[in-house]
Image (cartoon, rainbow, N blue to C red):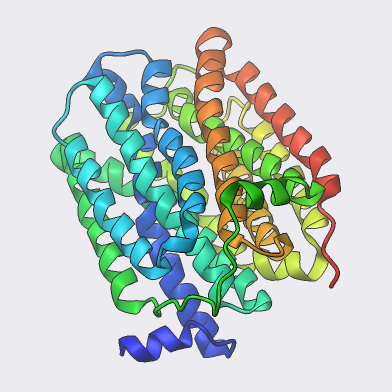
Length: 397
């Protein structure tokens, strides 16, 4: 069974595409579930650790520090890392800091463990993207990347729901224990079902610095990297601090129902899978612009005093950012001529730095000025990303 499925991951037949998308989506889900589940616990963590929202928001999103560092580190040693082994080992190691989070009550230790989680999450993420770039055809890779981002969407939805539900049932510690078990499940699936990766014949060694310099000389790739930065800046900002706004006096949502809010990611499960094929057909630039318009409309709706309008706005903003991310990720894979690991590492490092800066800056903005000013900053970032997208010309060869 493993051999059959593994070889199907290389094919372009409809059945192969479905199998590949399912397996890659599940691995993505189990890779990033830790990243987003903890964000749903923010109000509980603020009370549990006795710190302010900005401090805890930074600690929860500190995983992006590890992710930024890990993306470059994996790219540096990419020519020495077996893709499949690197993926499943990273997921197995991810379970260790995840389990430790269940037993700490010190905010500094919590932050350190989140950074460690980020290291292993980004290692698995970077290696999976590189695996897809190297084992799939150009057409199949776009769909596989979209499948991976769809798994990312699912982790946003079900990870947050699971975190909130487990916290209600067995407490915050139980949530992290459950996530550790899922990390190990992801390691098993990657070990069992990913096809072995073969090194290219007579590989030409290129220093990571030279590979990074080559990618940074490309105006198209520079634009994609900066867009990645702004995308997670916006996403972390809205879906971290909106938790506090939802249970605040303006919207007054009962915290018991906070987990249900994350059904706003449900539409993204249906829109994101087609992002790769749509971007490949129409080009990344118009697709990104359309996604940016949708995201801005959703952010504006999040300022409403009506809970139903805010939730609809969050659903639209979530679908827009995920669609844009899938388009940008696929664009990097299509545009990089060589050294895909280096290109993916630069993109993901920029992407996660955006999340880190977003958690710091927007936490301070929210604490000092409130939700309206926070949304205004997010809108400005999204409009800047749309302007930068002018450079996303498709490569013709």
